[in-house]
Each structure stands twice: as C-alpha cells, then as structure tokens.
Length: 556
Ligand code: GLC
Ligand code: CA
Image 1 (cartoon, rainbow, N blue to C red):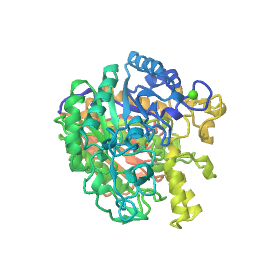
Image 2 (image 1 turned 45 degrees about the vertical axis):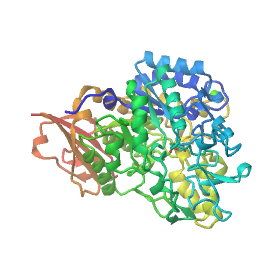
Image 3 (image 1 turned 45 degrees about the horizontal axis):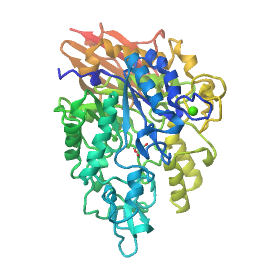
Image 4 (image 1 turned 135 degrees about the vertical axis):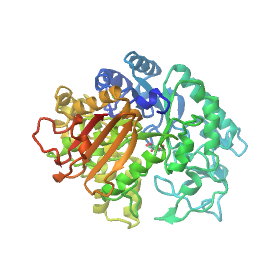
C-alpha cells in the first residue's frame, strides 16, 4: 500500500460563494452565509472545503479576476468574517483550501495599473507585453473567453496577453519578482492557517517565449500547445513547492487544463516535489465537437470508461488522482452523465456518486451535487450572467457559426451558469438562498429538490452521499485499493473492482434506463452489499435495474 496521507482519505466539498448562502439579503452569497451552513457540511461528513475565490475582485469573471490578494471581496464580507469562517470550520474538523488564481490578475490590480503606465515602469515586466505586427496583434491567438488573446493599449502602443478576458491580463512568470511576490502572498495565507490551495489554470503559467501563431480553429489560432504545460511549468512548481508548499502541511490540487497522464505524473508525483494532485479534463472534454465544448452531444459510455480507467491505471503508484463529475465551470453531473427526469434523477445521481466515490483518488463534491441539483433552462439570454456564455453567444451567432436556437440549446447543456444557480436550501421563496433578489435566477425545481427535504430522508441523494463518505472512513480499500476495469466493451454498464490485500470490492453501475442482465462471477455469491441505490426493492442478483448502483465487498 502506498503512503497514507490525510488528503488521500479526504472528501472535498467545493463552495462557489456567490451562489451558496446569502446572509444579508443583497442577493449575493457571502462568508457569513457559509458560516451559517458549516453544521450542514459537518453533518454531510466532508473533510475539506475548497472555496472558490473570495478575494477582492471587480467580478468580470466572478472572482477569478483578483485585484488584491490580501483582502476579501466587499460583497462577501471582511477579513474578520474570513477568520471566523476558518475558525468555525477548524472547530468542526473541516479544513479550508483556497483558490489560488495566479496565471492572471484583474486589470484593476495595482501591479497592472502600474505596468501599463510606461515601458520603464518597475512593474512593466509583471505582465506580457509585445509589439504589434503590421498594425495588428502580435500573433493569432484567441482568448478562452473569445476574441483575440491580445489587447491593444494606447498608453504605450503595445499589446498585453490575456488568455481569458481582457480584464484578466496574464502574469509574466519569467519574471522572478512576480514569482517572489506570489510566494510571499501564499505564505501570508499559510501563516493565517489555511489548509491548502486549488491552483487555477496552473498548467498555463509558462508560455513558449517565441509566441508562434496557433492552428486556426474557428476564428482564431489555438494557443494550447504553447501555453498549456509550457516549457518551465514544472520548474516553477518545484520552486513554489520548495519555497512555500513544503513548509506547511497542505493539500494542493492543480487545475491543469490540457494535461496528459504523462504530465500528471510530474505535477502530482508521489515524490511530492510539485503538487498533491491535479484536475484532468479528458472526461469532461469527451463530447467536444467543432465548436469545442458548445455542443449537445452526449458522452459515450465506452469512451468515458476508457478515459477514467486510463487515469486510474496510469497514475497507479506514481501520482494521485482527483475525482470529479462537475464544478463551477461544468454542467450539473446528473444532467450530463445521468438522467435528470423526475423519474430517474435521484437514482442516477446516486449511481454517479457511487461510480466516482469508489474509484481511487480524492473525490470532490460540487455544492448542490449532493442534492442531485440539475442544469437550468433559462429561455432568455439576459438571464445568463457567465462571461464565457455571453461572449461566446455574441461571437458565434454574429459570425454565423451557429443559429440563435442552436446556441441556446448548447447553453442549456453546457453553460457554466448551470452550476451557478443558487443552492437550493428549502422550498421557501428563493429556495432559502436569499431574502432579497438573487444575483442569478433560482432553478425553478427547488420546490422538489432542496436540502431541507433531503437531510432527514434516509432515501435522499443527500443521505446517500453521507453514507458514501462514511464508508470511505471505514474501509481503507476505498482509498487505497487497486483499480481494475471489467467488461470494458459493455455499452450500458460501468463495472470495476478494487483490491487491497485480502479484500475486494466490486462496483456495478448501470448508466442506462434499461434493465440489464449481468451476473457477477461465482466468487461474489457470498459477498456483502456495502451500499446500493435500490435498497428495499426486490430484485434478481443477475440483473441491474435502471441506473442501479451496487457495491459488493468480499474478504478471503
Ligand atoms: C479556471 C476557473 C474558471 C475561470 C478561469 C479563469 O478555469 O475554474 O472559472 O474562469 O480559470 O480564471
Ligand atoms: Ca450577501
């Protein structure tokens, strides 16, 4: 068995503060709101909260554009509130992992305000400035939020790079002063007692310094090969590890967009010289089409099994996995991988949870996932708030890449706002999220799907998650057992086993609404059922009912 670590045994719960709980009726979730729900999280049993950014920000990208790393966003509260949150969480045995957004800052950050003033400003090289080419951008790169990745700045007649919105200029990690300032800031938060970092697009911090044109996809060139997993990214992370991370007992997870399993073995190596684990994107990029993520294509189960299993087996003994179906950038898990109809919503939400939590790695729950919250369908574009959704609609529709109707369909499947409608606490007005007008509309299904209805119901999705989390605390095999995919060509079932010493688990998941015949091998006849989502329902042992999940345990 590999080395024990608390972060391998933990379950992480992601909070998107803007949409979690509003304490003062301004329609925006805040820190006091989170504090008021700590007992809820304690009851659920999670070990770690990953807090999406709470730093001062003009909110061009909801906090992922930071203007001061040392202060709290006014709308969310104060530093005293933060300290109270940290303290309240710690008292309940819950750790707090902060989002660390250091690929870019806000254009309102003092470094950038200085940087753009003149070519010889001491902060000039904190960002990536280039001369134009023949009166145009330095190269053809498109930003991930549409438009060119370069913005012209009149002041000095040069362009700056922004991989995301033009209000999110990319920091220049080549500059040692930038790195030192970032490490100092990280250290300041560690001194405060936080328990780790989730590092935003950390795979993008090192850019190919020749800045070549990218292959044109859609309207712009693709920067991925020159920015993702760039030439010095591992040097920088080793340096960060040496200067900050290794000096504290932290949990670190990198959002490594574009990562391969080969790269992951460096980022999240068991050697511990960079990060503890990373988020890979292969399973959430599976259904991509010619317009990238903007499609309504469903993911193919065989491909999904392939990708998940590849990460399970290739990282074995070399690096640690993180496990997720959704987060604040992805559609709701049950709508995407399961079935969000009234009939199958709860069953498929539980099935997906089983499938993920029984794999090897640290599982992440995104707020509301534990209730089976679903995608939302706003009919009007104005009801969407996400910069990615709005910019993409504008660029694709006005350039005739899609019709308005098509784009709305894609938005219903893929918009990040699917995950950002407020938490559904109860069936009172505004789902108990706010006494005011919520910053984004509530999903109308809060009447049926809400926490209050689920916490005391033993058959709820919530209670099922609670049980999964507690099983993890009882069985080492769930954390440390070896993974093996079975029936890899089965089109309806996802079946795998875990092994640790004399113990064995068999995980059976039906990803369809069909009844599927499947009888496990004889050796499982006397096994015990650890958890299943049809308990109390009479059924045959050689059949799986629609969206059934069953976990068998045997000891020899
Ligand atoms: C990450 C965040 C996303 C944000 C982007 C730019 O992907 O998860 O929400 O928009 O980085 O910071
Ligand atoms: Ca508020």
